[in-house]
Picture 1 (tube, rainbow, N blue to C red):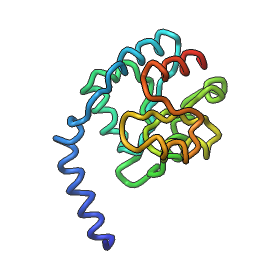
Picture 2 (tube, rainbow, N blue to C red; picture 1 turned 180 degrees about the horizontal axis):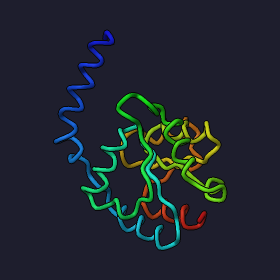
Picture 3 (cartoon, helix red, strand yellow; picture 1 turned 60 degrees about the horizontal axis):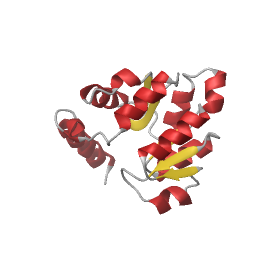
Picture 4 (cartoon, one colour; picture 1 turned 90 degrees about the vertical axis):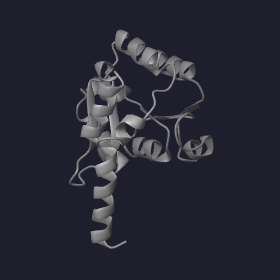
Length: 159
């Protein structure tokens, strides 16, 4: 695609995603309960996403998850922070040094894992969502979990 075609395609995507697409997400079973447990344990919860941070914030609010999240680090419409490692670095900038040392990245794609590794963080791959177990393992995930209970055990032990 030419740069003009790319710009037009992005505009069409955003025109649909903004009023409709962002509400077509689903909250995975047990995630709200896990987030509540993490908050009760004193965890700082950040969302690092290559999505536009405004969309991510609206998705969290729509699904009543924003109350668990301390901050959202995402991309900007002008293309700032497109790569996962850039987004994760931006999220880490919001943490004090003690929290940075205990930070982990949880994701369902290899981008999440390789972004975490680039910044020296352990990446936890989850098998719900997109991608495959093999993708996460090949990317170097420190752990790959199949169930929210497994993720909870890892996180609450680490916290």
